Amino acid sequence: MADTPITQAPELTGEAGYVSPYPYLDRLQEKMEERLARKVPAAGRFCAFCYARLRETDAVCPFCEATIEQTGTVKEIPQDVLRLYKAKRDTEARWVYGLGFVGLIVASILFVVLEVWGPGPLGHPAVGFAVLLFGGYALAQFFGTLIGGQIGYRRGAKKRDALWGEWLSRRVEKG
Ligand SMILES: [Zn+2]
Image (cartoon, helix red, strand yellow):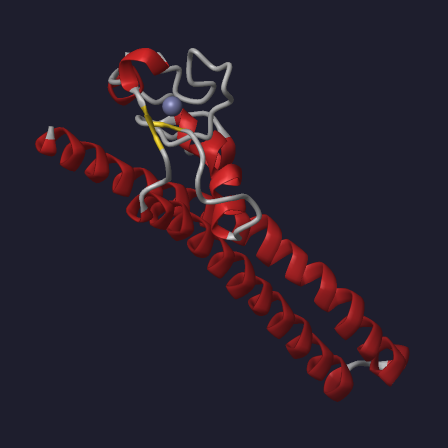
């Protein structure tokens, strides 16, 4: 059961054109970010395969579909595992903010161009400031949230999945 998700061949669909070979990691991401932000208690009852928090009534893990009786449970999520979700989140955030900043720079350049070379009413400071404000916001959204979000998601998820793959093989070695 536990090794099925690893051997599955990824299809070329999914969010931002990247499909995780471990689909449960994407579903766990939000939960792990809550744990990273300490919004939920560190201790609990977790699936010993994917470290999802379990309810007392769960016989099958709702995330990786492991049978709890066979897989067992652990009392907390290992730090190394939390770290790989943090790597995904941080990579994505860097791309969103980084490219968002690019959008602001583009708007600033546009502002200067209008102020210096803008013909007639286009050279009016009010037009320039409107471009700076609304253009800056729109361009930051476009570059950051849209483009940066896509690239960041792909890179972050790939990094996380690679780290999880390493974690899985280390765990197998240890027995
Ligand atoms: Zn699980």
